[in-house]
Length: 79
Image 1 (tube, rainbow, N blue to C red):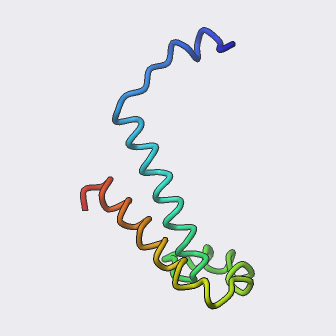
Image 2: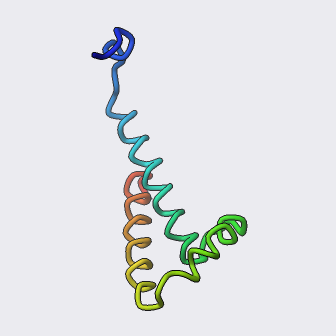
C-alpha cells in the first residue's frame, strides 16, 4: 500500500515532460560517450573500455540510436 504522502502527490504534464527530457539527455549522452563523441572528455575516458568491447559492425547502429536520442532531446527542448 502507498503511504498517504505518496498518494497525495500530484504530477503535472510539465513534470512528466521534464522527466522525459532528463531521460533522453541521459540516453543521448550515454551513446555519445560509448562512441567517444561526448563533449566531456571525462565521459569519453570513462567509456573507453566499453568502446573497445563494441564490435565495429555495431558502431553504425549505435550512431543511429544516438541520432534518434538527439532528435528526442531536440523535440523536447523545442530545437
